[in-house]
Length: 193
Image 1 (cartoon, rainbow, N blue to C red):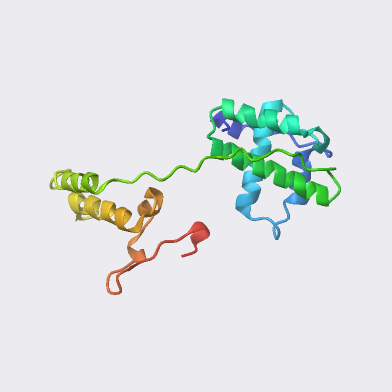
Image 2: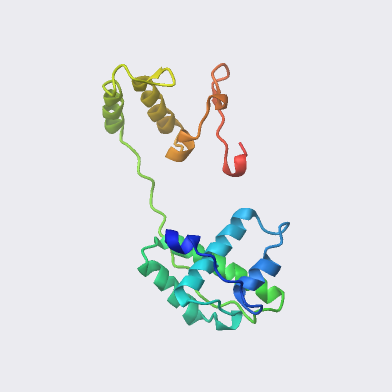
């Protein structure tokens, strides 16, 4: 991934025949692309710029060039799933450029076969041990008036019974809990429940 110094560095204005120029002028039509998609496309192109030290043109993105770039990302330490995500972003940009006549063809770069690991979960014994430890955690201390032991017990149990990711549990707020109905409302991406 980009280092903080690379992120803070302003890239020069892209040349008119570069991929980055095409993305900013043609691909970035707000009604066609979500902000998240555009951010991901821009990040993929920033990585491409950092790798090659300049803006590339569509004609330069051969299969060998894309594979070389993906291998470079792997050598930088990116996970296989992240590199696959960059591959998809680059090929999506090129595919769009073929529909507008700015690129001749999409390079045939096969999927990297990113492995999707099974999520790690506590066993029942581990859960009971963890819950037992909450009663001994910071006795007498509170978080916003809630005893720490009760807070952590609830936090762990909500995560266990809902199978939510830690980030989703951390983002829960009081307004998300309806004790009468027994419902917990979890917002998805972009704030949708």
